Each structure stands twice: as C-alpha cells, then as structure tokens.
Image 1 (cartoon, one colour):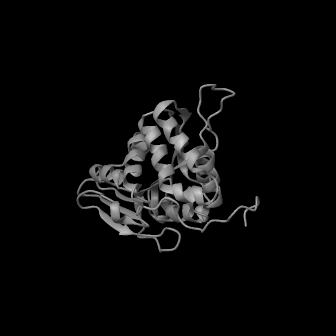
Image 2 (image 1 turned 90 degrees about the horizontal axis):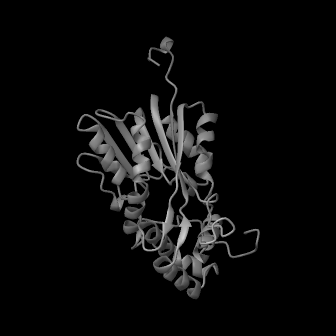
Image 3 (image 1 turned 180 degrees about the vertical axis):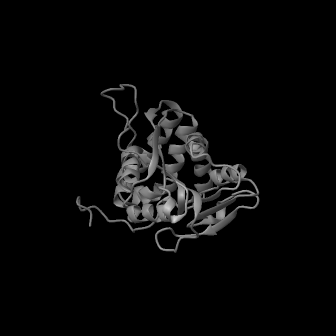
Amino acid sequence: MCADNRVQLPDEYLLPNASPVAADRLTLLSAIFNPASQAALERTGVGPGWRCWEVGAGEGSLARWLNARVGPAGSVLATDLDPSIINAGPGAEVRRHDVTRDAPPGNGFDLVHARLLLCHLAERESVFDRLIDTLKPGGWLVVEDFDGVSMPPDRQYGPQETPLPTHTALQALFRRRGVEGRTGRWLAAMMRARGMAGIHAEGRVFMALERTIHARFHRLTVDQVRDDLIKAGLLSEAAYTAAMNALESDFLAPTPLLWSVIGRKPAVSNAEGVQP
C-alpha cells in the first residue's frame, strides 16, 4: 500500500518493448544519449577481440556500435527481457535474459554495459554485483542511469521553464512502480564501495525545447504509459492534451540527467598468475 493511500499498481515493467511506441521511443533515446554512452565506452579502450555483454539492449544501437568496434575476432552478446526488437549487427548473439532471475549468460567478459536498467530493479544492488562478477580481472563495467530528481523545471530560477503535469505524473507513477529516480547519482559510489579501479563519472543533460527530439522523447514516454497514468488518477485527459500541445508550441525544460560511470574490476595479483 502506498503511503498516500492511492491505488497500488501492479509490479511490472512500465516500458516494455512490446509497446507499439517502444521502438520509436528507444530510437529517440539512442539518438539523444548514444554520444555520451559511446564516449564512456571509448574510455575503456574497447577494441578488436574484446568480449562484450550489452545488458538490456533495447533496440540494439549500442550493441551494433560495440560489434563494429570488436570486429570478427571479438564477440558481443546482447540480452533483454524482450529481445524482439534488438538489431545487434552481423555475428552478434541476441538472447532473452532476465538479469534478476536467470544465471549470468557467461563470464570472463572484457566489458559489460547497461544503460537505464538498474533504476527499474528492486534488486539493483545484487544485479550490480552480478555484473561485476561476470567480468574478467581487469575487465570494465560501464553503467548509465538517470538522475531524474535533480533537474526538474523550476520557474523560480528559470521563469520561462515549462513544468508540465506529465513531468510530475511520470515521477509519481515511476515511484509507485519502484523506479528509483536517483540511481544515476549513486553509481560512482556503488563502484567505489566495491573496490572498482579507474572510476570515471560524467553527467549529460539537455535543455529541451518545443518540436525537438527531446520533446518528442517526452511525448513517446508519456504515450507509452498514458493509460496507466490516467487509470491511476495521476493525469487527466485535459492535462495530457495541454502538455502535448505545449511540446509543440512553447516548451522549455531540462531533460533528466544521465550519469555515465565506468570502473575496472581489480586484476588478480601476480602471485595468482594474472598480470595487474
């Protein structure tokens, strides 16, 4: 039961790939945030011959990018709860996998990457540990997630910013479903607490304006959960229409802040026969 006594919604993933708008939404997300993700991945030195696991691969754009980087001597495994829309590129392996319940799909990876995965998982700490366990000594973990709490529209400091009812409704719905909006802010500390080396963390945020890719991304995110929002009493039809009109006419608001964090699994000591 929620503390405010509102209806408790079913515990299920809010943004499934089976949704009619999922592929378009994920394509927009990739267009916005892939440059940050690729920059983080490049910092690891990923290249020919590497074994990579792309966790929660979505539509597969980063799996394709990794596939091109590792070449035929390397390998890319792309997994998702619903892999039906993954295009990982020639030679890459695509597999259905539930990271919270299924055994890891391998070990000894040079690189494991997950974007916007942990925030949705009640088991985020144990999944984080599991991802580290699949790395070889010296392997890299790259984890990215939103801090959607620190960057709301704020007319006190930005009089022309546009707080939309869909912003607050989405945050309320995500909280009810167990989505942790601060996950991105915690990633560097999670790496440090586990003794990861070479930690580097960067955040990326945009100021979204009307009729831009960022406004379209917000629209598709709302559309994917619109029925849930209305059934829960978090958004009215009139408020939805007003917000969608604002995205086309007079909109100014920051996007969620995406943290991209990398860390390296410590190498086994020379006494155990592995170079640091």
